[in-house]
Image (cartoon, rainbow, N blue to C red; front, side):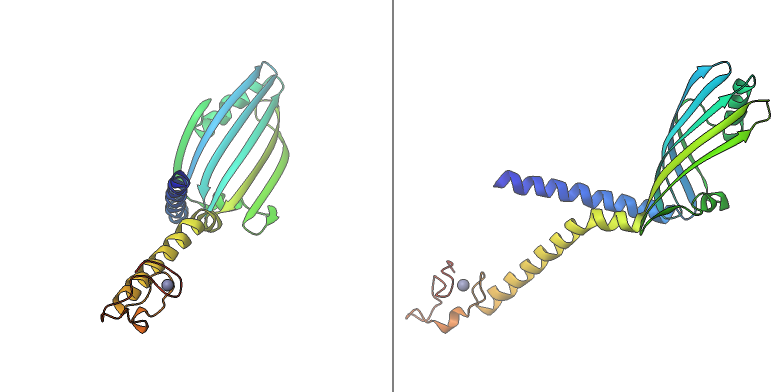
Length: 207
Ligand SMILES: [Zn+2]
């Protein structure tokens, strides 16, 4: 099963690299918030829908979320332009990085969840400046970086620790004249010529 061992090696490498990337993001997330968002606008006139799908890293978490805003009324178009003006975002892909401020922590206020996995859904009605009315439906899931790093890193790290232990043990056995497979003392069984036996009498491994 050579291909299986190779597949396992590739998987372990990918997981290890992912775990390292998460750790780097983790450290960074305490002074910078990084986001990648995709923004779609549909509708026109007095009913405009703006959808933001995004993933981000901040305050020790990875966040995935969607926000839909429904802007209605004669000022809907102006509301949308105002929002884009204030946030600096625009339809399509947006990548942003900014210093972490208190708004990042407020974002996580009173979300519900279990352990390192938290979520929130918030629907809010806003009366906007341009005689429009906007309703926002926002939901996200966030997962702590430490738990992601542990999940991704567990298998590759324990597996390489076990194989390092295995190598050290074999080296020690070879030096001490013990069977490499089972640790049986090969010197205890003379082969009659003063050398070591060629086959382990305990497990049958060729010495
Ligand atoms: Zn043996």
